[in-house]
Image 1 (cartoon, rainbow, N blue to C red):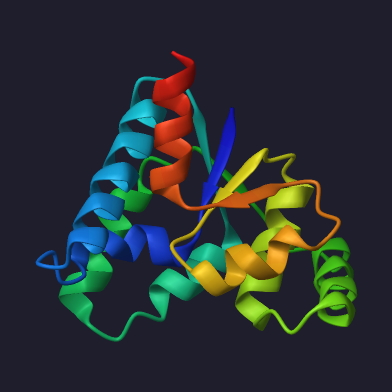
Image 2: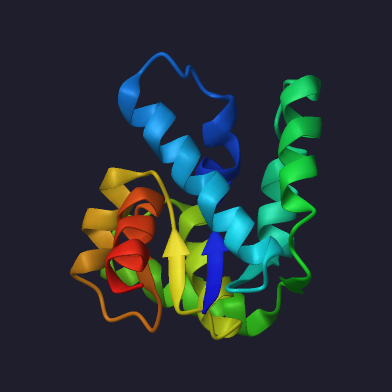
Length: 148
C-alpha cells in the first residue's frame, strides 16, 4: 500500500500528548511509520511536504519532524500537472492550498491513502472525486488490524 502522511501527521507526535486523542493518533502515526520501515507499506512524500516541514518555525520540532520524514524513500516532485490538479480541486471546495497540493501530489504518485489528523479536510474530501482515500491515521491502523 502506498501511504502519504501530511504535515499534521508528522507533527502529531510532538503535540501535547496529555490529550487522549492526540496520544492515540501519535501512536497510530508511529504504527504507520513502522509498517513503512518493515516494508509492509510504502511511505511516500513530496517536495510540497518538504517545503511545509522546512517552514516549521520551532527549530527543535522541525528537526524531530525531519527525522521522522527520513522514512520516505520516494518523494513526488512538484510539477505543472500537480499545480493544475490543485487548481481543479480549488473549484470543488475551499480546501487550503497546501492541502490541495498534498492531495494532487498524492494522486500524481499513485498513492492509495493520504493520512491526516485534520477532521475538516477528511470531511471535505469525502464529498469529492479523488483517486486517493483521505483518512485519519488511527482509522487506517484500526482497519489494518481488523483485516489482518
